[in-house]
Amino acid sequence: MLAAELYRVIREIEKLEAAARASIPGTPVTEERERKLREAIAERDRLRKMLEGAKET
Image 1 (spheres, rainbow, N blue to C red):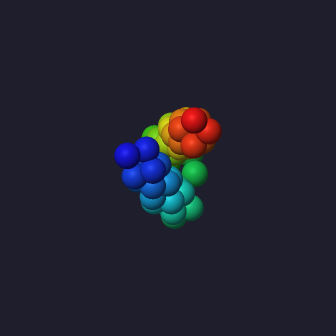
Image 2 (image 1 turned 90 degrees about the vertical axis):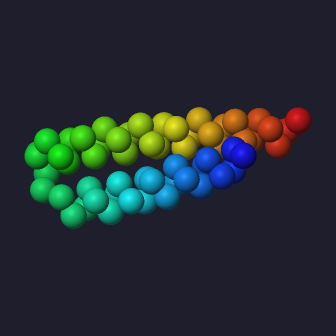
């Protein structure tokens, strides 16, 4: 279950990174994408830590 959620978040990060590369810096849309990207990266890191913790037990 965690692995599937982690995979989903990684795919979302890839999509947001591609959109960020294609957008114009400084626009409100770009700032919103960057915020979503930061949140997705934080979620990915949190899920990775949870998955690593589950492997250790």
